[in-house]
Image (tube, rainbow, N blue to C red):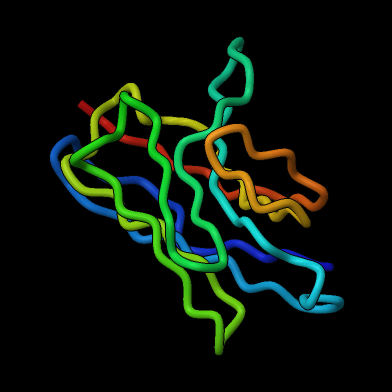
Amino acid sequence: VQLVESGGGLVQAGGSLRLSCAASGSIFSINAMGWYRQAPGKERELVAAISSGGSTYYADSVKGRFTVSRDNAKNTVYLQMNSLKPEDTAMYYCAASSLTTIATMVPDYWGQGTQVTVSS
């Protein structure tokens, strides 16, 4: 399975960005998909995840601001990020799992990452 992210960039605080992640390869093995982020000097953290059936999970820090969705026909998962804050600045990674769990997602596959920078 290959995961390719797009949509990162530089945005001012309060702005919006939409990340996309296209999956290819042995996609039949994928159940949960999600987005992680890692800021400099910090551990990678799960931001949002979505099951193949559409159930979602969000970290407390992004609830009400971020929305995760997926288009199974296009094998693509999205992360709509609104009301961005400087503390959202990080490298964002797409991930996919053969398991169905989302809150405690265990990725089998990772994308290469896309940088999101929010200026104050």
